[in-house]
Length: 563
Image (cartoon, rainbow, N blue to C red; front, top):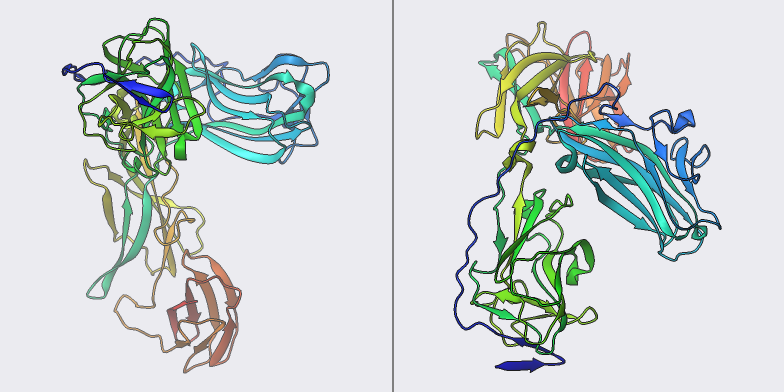
């Protein structure tokens, strides 16, 4: 039976259930690292255009259009591809020497790019590509749709290059290079980074007001868990198949709203699987989009050798990581379906309308649903997501944490402890009872993570402070409680909270006043005040929490106020 809807008709072919469930899990084989050559660049690798020569870092160029520009760099010289009237149907490459990967941490490419356009034709292109030892992989592409000033780009390439020696290249390609004045690239850096702990905080410890100590707390880095191998809206069993009554092209898809894949944020899109039926002359194109109505195509792969009357599983070759904030669409286009063919498999339903049953009758048509066309089915279409932690070749082991301390005016931090990582533990506390005496005015802490993979060890950046995420340390101010627990402070501070000023008042003349922010940074200081009452202007301070430390011959104290 055939049902016509507009100019497209979808046909339900099978009336019986075809059992074919997904079985097994992905198998990951660990590849030995490529032997390192002393001639290769090591990480971190940074270009040196200031030398005004591509040979400094052993860059190679094709053609004569790549030059060093000493005027238009983003903080110095840059590499420039110059357009010219005689250069048509071209491609020109700027390629690095071999770079040694590392075993531990994630690997990133960072660079700045700028375009000065002449004609906004969209036919001149700029690509970042990575060579993983066997083939070049496209990471980013830009076209000449208008001039733009310097933009910074950063991409993780761990999945492509970890344990390998590799190259990066910047390729320009197009129809008529006279459409542009030039592509500029600057500040290229390839580096590795392992994840840091987070939310560092500290507080005082007392025992009957004696035995001063500090408690330092932090949270572990994100410890990757294995992502669900396959997800979709179907039940995993093929029920029927659909096609166009008169043949032609159409596209099917499933989707998740923005935030719908937040639980899989940073997971790698590894595979797509769908149930396909025979095409005599046509073919399938696997596609991945982001955005409302699939407005941004981020992956496309034309398939050959599709398994017929069976599940076809496709490996996604690009390094596509889930951004949990985006809307995602996954699907395939059927090209040149012939009359009487029904290539797109579906389950028995009921449909998850608008998510598991999306269809597009032609490239120009709007997206519709099987539900609207009278079919209460979901497409037999699923995706596989994996994380670095679930893939043994890319798994780093968190060994523990190094804790560091500095007191008073010390600028160097001393390591005071190594805290081992405990399985399943994400919150850590360390009690520091080794505070030097006499007690310092200020004591500060930092903590980082220690990772290991094979023979490599990686020390992360320091954890961010819980209450000041832009800082990599926390500081405490001793509050003038001495080792016997006697409070000497007779000073007061008002108003609190304050808007424009605060007043420090004492029974005795004040000697010194120091103003600190929450991180321990000294903002203002006043010496030899010699007054019992002192007013401080705070109109220029941002809103937040601050400390006032006072001292005189008779008394000393620490007070906190809120702006």
